[in-house]
Image (cartoon, rainbow, N blue to C red; front, side, top):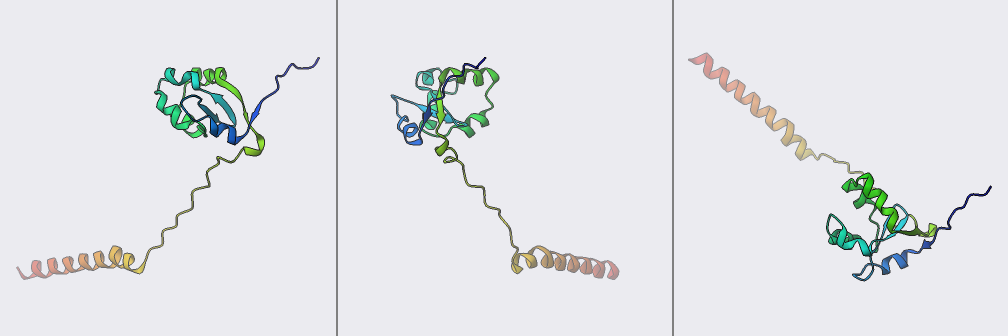
Length: 133
């Protein structure tokens, strides 16, 4: 017995970008394309949230909000297809560069030697005045 599987419609990146106006709002979440035009006014976070993401990748924004299971289930209602395999990864952000802090001699002096010298001076002055009186 063969499985009855619906054929997935693929959309190119250029087409997704064309749907970023008030008349049509499509978003991309984890390689899936959703037409959220009819959901704009119903969105609990306000329609501006969806309009800002329209025509682009909303994966990070969707995940960051922490949508409920019901909200994730609701996305099925607006699913229209998938991002074409050739366009996947186009939205991937480059990795954050590794930041290596290199201390200069000036910061080494100011953060170690100067406070140590000041502490030693205060200790010697205290001892000097404590012994005299």
